[in-house]
Amino acid sequence: MALRSLVRGSVAYSIGNLLPRVGNFLLLPIYVRFLSPADFGSIALVTSVSSLLAIGFRLGLDGSLMRLHFTDVDPRRQDRLLTTVATVTTVAAAIGAVLTAWLSWLFFAQLFAGLEFWPFGAFAVAIAFAMTFIYLPATLFRAREQPIPFLTFTAGQFGVTAAVTLLLVVTLHAGAVGALVGQLAGGLAVLVVSVVLVWRAGGLVLDRRLAAEALQFGLPLVPHGISGWVLSVSDRWLLSFLLPLSAALARAQIGVYSLGYQLAYVVDLGAQSINAAWVPFFYRYGSTEQGPAIHREMLTVVTAAFAAVIASLSLNANLVVAIIARPPFAEAARVVPIVGLAFLAHIVYIWMVTVVFHARRTAVLPLISGASGAVNVGVNLVLIPRFGIEGAAWATLASFTSIAVLTLWYAYRVYPVTIDWMRMAVLLAGTAGAAVYAVAAGGGLSAGRILLDLGLSALFAIVALAIARSPALSLRTLTREASRSLAQAPAGG
Image 1: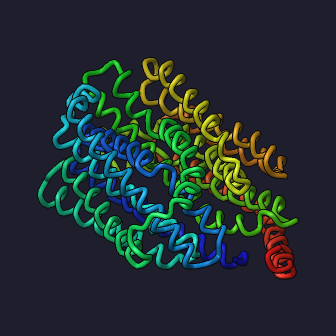
Image 2: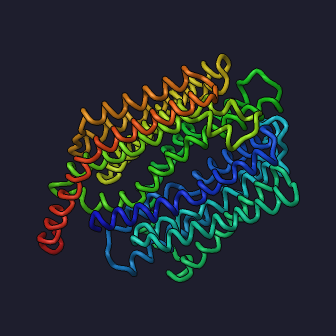
Image 3: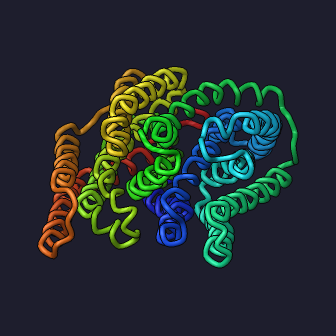
């Protein structure tokens, strides 16, 4: 894949990855118009449960499918890998869904006061089962470097989810349940596409050697994925337990926090979308002489781009929330700058962990993510009772910074990492300064404040663009050199 292909793929993958999430972002005004903060909080809690279950159901095989796809160029063996991981996933998800449905029936109402197993617990399990299989088409299209099928797949999933959600929430006024039915409909669409792809590849067939190899690579990623869930999602649970409020008021605060978190999360989704094209690109060029330099320049370019976006979002959070949400959600703007800064640290982590995957040294990742998850829980326990949703935001920043630093430390030990520290320091410090200013300035939507914040956003973007220019030009040259090196390498070398 040439650099131009990386750019084209990044655009397509960005649209494909962002479409369902941006779609949810575009649906936010609908949610906050037809749902109360408590209903929005209920959806956030159910979604957090389903995302945790899906991690366990997958057994880390989403990571295995991508990495092992590149170990054999024979299409027949690649199909065999697909059918094998699909078979293992189907068995694991079916058993897991039955067990968790039974446990949810017994304990769901005790875990989440005011939310009964029917319908909320049942939807959590059903959505988790359906969405478990999303990695099959998504990973396959990425591994085959097919951004257009990937885009079509994600667009179809979003279309189904959005259509059902709008029908039930807006037309039929079905509330939180209607939104969850929309998510389940999107999951069932994913399941249909997965079945078709696996059927074309040969159906549910088990190759024991491939299954063992995939599980050996993937199972260490399960605690890593759970730790990632703790980092990203567990704060909703902790807010429900630790806020000194009634169950209904606590869910309303969770809804407000979730809105602010989702506004900042759009930035992280953009980074993950570019990373979807970057991973196969780096797997191809990472072992060349130019690999470390390519990684360094790409990290700088990506950090510059998203630092500008995060700074702008932080500076204009009050305006954005005022435009899309009703007054009961206004407090969401308080968490956007803090969580946005956390996602900048997470972007650094994403680029560092790619190095670890390339080196096939994943065994330490659960320890790193587990330690960072412990930081998240510990800081939440201390700060939520005192500072409420802002405490949860600061815990997110602390834990994402922790996982970025620890993964950077480990990446240095498994790969010849080089970093442009001068440019990175300027970008990180500038973004932190914008976030501190936004938090200290607080609310307010006077014309002068709006103009000042927009002007600061534009200035930051210009500076970030100037910082990224030289690394971007260097990246193009390095990629050409690496392509020539690969072309000249002996077959099988």
